[in-house]
Amino acid sequence: MSNIQSLTYFLPELILTSSAMVIILTDVFFRGRNRNRLIWLLSLVALGIAAIFLLLQTTPPDAIFYGALAVDPYSRFFKWIFLLATVVIYVVSPYSRELDNNPRHEYYLFMLLVVFGLFLMASALDLIIVYLSIEIVSIGSFVLAGFLKQERLSNESSLKYVIYGALSSGVMLYGLSLLFGIAGSTNVFDIQAALSGVPDKAHLTLAVALLLVLTGFGYKIAMVPFHFWTPDVYQGAPTTITAYLSVAPKAAGFALALRILGITFGSSPDMNLGEWLPVEGLPFGTLIAIFSAATMTVGNIIAIQQSSVKRLLAYSSIAHAGYMLMAAAILNAQAVSAIMFYLAVYLFMNLGAFLVAIFIHNRYGYDEIEEWKGLGFQAPAVAVAMGIFLFSLTGLPPTAGFVGKVYLFSVLIEAQQFWWLAVLGVLNSVVSLYYYMRILKAMFLDSEPTGERISGHPALSGTILLLMIPVLLFGVYWSPLMNLVRSSLEFFSPGM
Amino acid sequence: MVVPLYHILAFAGLLFTIGVVGVLFRRNAIIVFMSVEIMLNAVNLAFVAFSRYHGNVNGQVFVFFIMTLAAAEVAVGLAIIVSLFRNLRTSDISEIRLMKH
Image (tube, rainbow over all chains, first blue to last red; front, side, top):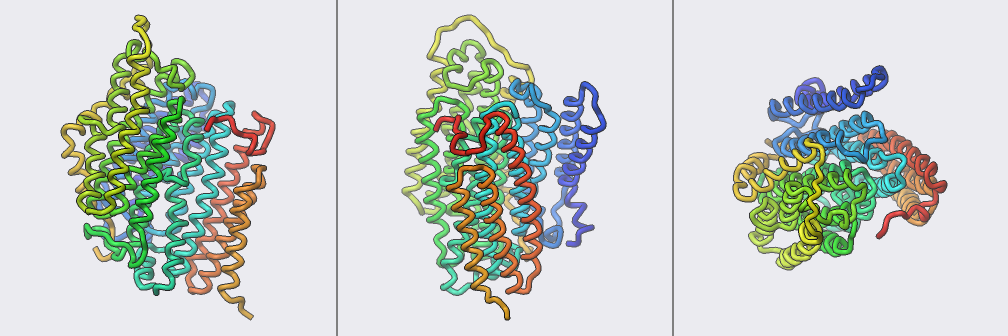
């Protein structure tokens, strides 16, 4: 589809970029006292308009911008996840005390640009867009992670983020250049056509290219062994940003990896077939299964030893990427829908847990488990909500996390492959119960009621309680969400 | 005389390895960023070589994107090093270990 025609299908993204320009200009020319508030409001309005255009968007018959971007129900589902996560973070950001000494208007601007990058990640169909979108997200996140300029931890976290980010994107680019070399095109469908006809001799090159590309994707979803940045960045970054990084870019990484790997290394260009097979002779499933096993085991084992809640949640988020990769080893329609369902549920429970961490941080300025002692008596509603988020993260009924995990495990069991991986997944869930319960124990059992009450800003506590609703609701009545996921399971393919 | 594809690819592979080793073993943050640039330039070389081999311009277009984004990435990286240096008075990454492991 030509560029001019494509613009009508690109409106949500256009809104995001143009409002970023407006915000930069406002920042330059408006020097009033309420600048932070004004820019906060402008960005929320921009997100709202983008959401309206996303809602009204129709599916074009062809990929837009000459085959560079797909506008399909699959990408739209992920765009809703990004918008939801962003709006939650925007709503609570003005009430996070950590950010008080820094100009928040720039923070809002960078978040808007990151959302634009995430949108591109969900629809990329061309290797150039893959690289471009990952970098747009990364560069914005580097700045956001180091946003507390006076804090050494924040400096350190953003330096580590930049170095690991640059290294992994360089390695990924080398893999992309190999793919381009084998196929002679940057379009994923052309690459797929070329790869399904490569002689057996070239399979080693193909496996190397797959590994190198997985480095870049693995970095975004925090897959072991490309996870080294995660704990440090999550600990040092402002907690609002940690919450955001643990949800939105991870979801985008999965959206991108599933689509790009699924098409390029699949034996058919059409992802809608339901069954998926890798290019003949490529051990795709086994490779992902090994990464998945390593990711969840490392994440859970190291999480046990953590005393900082932010760091603990960082390792737990690594483990969750491992659970989702478990389904990616099969990569049929059921697996993709299970991953999408889990990502949607993960959005609510993980954001919720991090918002409670912000609540505690506002009060004490630390995030050690020690500080959580007695929270059950001081702020009962928030503590109960945290308990529900933790139950859901462990995967205990009747919470949404349980339903999500059942779907993930059922993929392996119905495909009758990788039994060992399913067993390992269950064992890992048991391990995770231990460290999540440590937080619960600190909140409810480790101190006597003192009668002291702490209360956060109503916007913060209100958001925490609002996030609790879907976690409980989808735990008992999940069919609406699953229906939404199933109806979003429609990929763009050139023969459509 | 036309340089064969294999020679260019071998050179690109060598450059890339030098870059990766530099990132992994050098301690000064600025040298680390220079090593990243070497990696990216190795990739650029491979892209241009493949692009010429296949007669497809997309590879060369890709190189332009890599160059601009690398510049942006380094700009942010150097800004972070400056702000870190103000707080810690060092740019040696082996000394920047405040967080427990």
